[in-house]
Image (tube, rainbow, N blue to C red; front, side):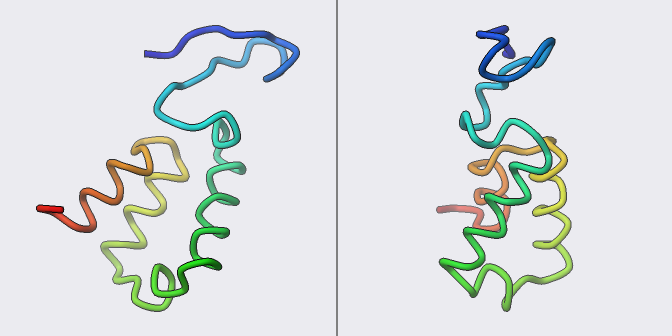
Length: 77
């Protein structure tokens, strides 16, 4: 799943996780991605149920990819 890539790009010892884009490798980066998506699509924040907030937290923690999170928020789509 994870593969080692150029240490200069990600810092010493960092592993690239292909489930996340190149700018969403760390929890801080994923939190920023979530923030930007909520800015562009405010309903992601204003309509966020406790279950959705939990899925967002799992995305930021790296437990779910963005796609996995969205699939769980909208089953059947």
